[in-house]
Amino acid sequence: MANQAVVFRNVAAHDYQLSETSPAVDRGIPVSNVTVDIDGNPRPQGSGWDIGAYEYTPSTIIYVSKDSSCNGLIPCRSSVQNGIALASGPSVVEITQDTYNEYLVLNFSGEIMLGGGWNTDFTSNSSYTTLSGLITITHGTLTLQNIILK
Image (cartoon, rainbow, N blue to C red):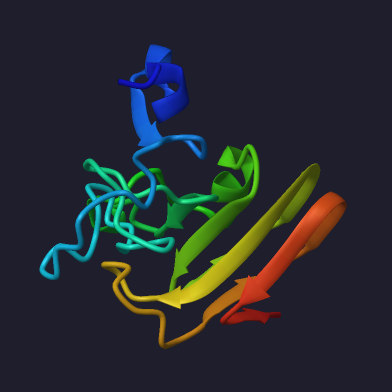
């Protein structure tokens, strides 16, 4: 068996998501009725299913819903800025279709993609999210998808 530090992201913090070096990535057996992992991430993400409860995702997915429910998906935040603040590397912030009146600040060397228009259970994004307020990017890259800026 491989070293736990190679297989999982952070065993000391009880984070058993697969690391990018995990030998379990893309080594699972396809199961047609298992389309998401324990966190609701689609399977497969790469060239095949991953072994275990978690599908390796190369970037962190952070969910944003005004009511903080996010259909039970974690991590979940009630504001877009709190979602951005949680990012510690390349991240995707998925946001429910709604209007958010916020002052957004991006100030770290990572890349964040804001994906708007998600329904309340985060199963489809066929609409738009409106961001009303200021956006300041002092460092980093911000990509927008299904976002209306006002």
